[in-house]
Structure formats: structure tokens, C-alpha cells
Length: 316
Ligand SMILES: Cc1cc2nc3c(=O)[nH]c(=O)nc-3n(C[C@H](O)[C@H](O)[C@H](O)COP(=O)(O)OP(=O)(O)OC[C@H]3O[C@@H](n4cnc5c(N)ncnc54)[C@H](O)[C@@H]3O)c2cc1C
Ligand code: SF4
Image 1 (cartoon, helix red, strand yellow):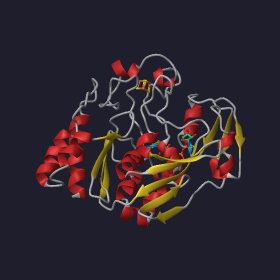
Image 2: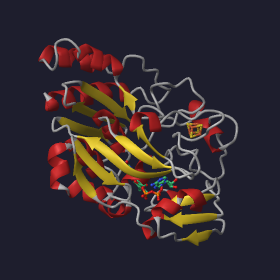
Image 3: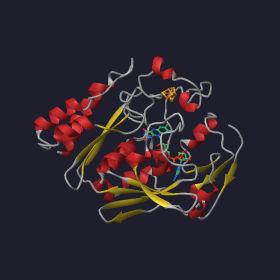
Image 4: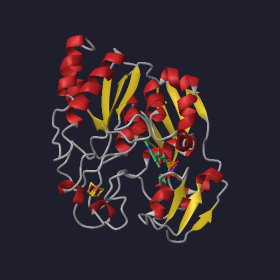
């Protein structure tokens, strides 16, 4: 780890103007501090958001919920209103990490955590995503990697469970920038595949801070996750299913692409008939449409079809 300054700014509204590519915001630190230790990130300074008045409240709003950026995963997990009204989110956070980590990890930090690809996290490897050349996972060990959109330069999967649930629920984030401007962004538009010019999995600028996450109600929603052990593991595959207020069914998978992955083929299979047993069978079969697995991760396809079937049966 390289030395860095630690800063506290009491007013959250004043934080974005202080941020630069080397002055970064710190929330729970459960991802960022591990990246510093691995020398993946070498900031000059961290600004501790927890020392500011950035939002920590969970509020009922018209048609849903507004969560302050510093709300922890464990508060979401145990909140009776969220468990009843947006079960997909409560189920996703309750299957993420461990109780100790969930007590510390914030919802905004969870969305912006970096991939767990073992080459990326190894300080002795400088792969494409870490700013180097080439992707050793493509021809190396790739059993945990992407099965969709595998033509791109990086085949790491997005590590967040809540992200898939939030995309299925149609959630948005509120973003404050260094000029004092505020904008609302769908989580589906926040998380995007990295490119040559932007080797990171989101569209935020260096001086952007997420201040809140707004989640529409969807009592008929769920998140299912397959892991290689019963607890404390990232998703091999996860599936979020949500029925929106106007009856639209959204299906989003985790563990299968650079971003939460909308299962468009499966959704299309439900468009006419709705959630009948026959349509659910067809949708589950279509969940893997367009998949192009790597050498070691073809096992993800039957997992994805099975979880899709179970998630749709649950919301039906
Ligand atoms: C052992 C282990 C197992 C895990 N298992 C899972 C799992 O199964 N599923 C899962 O979903 N996650 C898992 N995680 C990841 C964990 O949930 C994240 O590390 C955590 O949610 C990140 O939140 P944080 O508040 O600690 O963020 P930090 O580590 O503080 O920050 C993460 C990133 O977000 C940025 N950031 C934070 N807040 C803001 C903001 N408001 N605005 C702008 N930028 C911001 C930081 O600069 C940093 O780049 C695991 C982590 C560990 C260590
Ligand atoms: S999958 Fe992405 S993060 Fe992993 S080695 Fe390849 S370029 Fe790096």
C-alpha cells in the first residue's frame, strides 16, 4: 500500500468539488481498502464519506423507497418495509458477503465495487482492466467469468448481487457533481462495460458522488443466487425477477457479464401470455439465448435456466 492522506469534510455537498482522479471517496472501505492493499489503486487522499452528513435514512416515497447512499446492506436486509415491498433487494443483500461485511458495506459502495477476477486482483499481473495489455483470463482460468458479451476486452463479471436486483426493480441513483449539479440515472445506465478510454464498469466522473438510491415498489420480486458454497461467496449465477406496477416482468442476471445482464429473450417469451407455466418453461429455456461461454464456464448455462425458472415461478 502506498501512503495517502485521510480527509473529513462535514458537508456532503462540499465533497464532490474536492474529488479528483487521485482524491477518492471512502464509504465502508470493504472494497476500496483491499484495492489499496493490493496496489490496484494508489490515491493521494481519501475523503471519508462517513464523516459527512451524506444520507443514511431509509424513507418511504411516492411509489417506492429512497435510500441514502450510506445505508448499509444489513439495514436493508433487516428493514421490514423493504423486505415486504422490494423483496428482491432484501434477498440480494442478505446473500451478499458476511454479516460483518454487511454491517459495514454501503449500498452505493456495493454498486461501485470493482470485479473480483483473480488476475485483476493480483498485483503481479497487469491485465487490460488494470491498465495493461491483454486478458489472461480469456485463455487461462475462467470458470467464474462471463458467458454473455464475451467478445469485449474484459470477461470479468460484475460482482454485486444488489445491482442485479436494482436493475430488475428499475431503480435509479441520484448523483451530485463537483459543480453542484444533481442528476438522476437508472442503475441500468450507471453500470456499463469498460472501454479502452474508460477502464471501469460505471459512467461516473471523478467528481461524482452518489447521494441516494431510489427503488420502485415491487412486492412480487425475488433474487436467487447459486454459489460454490452455502454462504460468503460471490454469485456463480444470480437471477432477479420483478413484476413492475404496470405488470411488466423484468429478469436480470448476475455473475454472467461485465454488468447486470437483462435476459431479453426470456422476457420476450413472457410478453404475450404472462406468467403461465408454459410461458415460464419457454422463458427459462430462452434465458441463455445469445450466451457464448468460455472454456471453463459452460456450467453456468443450466444454472441460469434453472434459477430463471425458479425465480419466475416464485413471482408467479
Ligand atoms: C470477502 C468479501 C465477500 C464479498 N461478497 C460479496 C457478495 O457475495 N455479493 C456482493 O454483492 N458483494 C460482496 N462483497 C463486496 C461488498 O459488498 C462490497 O465491498 C461493499 O458493498 C462495498 O461497499 P463499501 O461501502 O465498503 O464501499 P467502499 O469499499 O468504501 O467503496 C467502493 C467503491 O465505491 C466508491 N464509492 C463508495 N461510495 C460512493 C459514493 N457514495 N459515491 C461515489 N463513489 C462511492 C469508492 O470510491 C470505491 O471506489 C464482498 C466483499 C468481500 C470483502
Ligand atoms: S477478465 Fe478483465 S479483469 Fe480479468 S484478466 Fe481479463 S481484462 Fe483483466
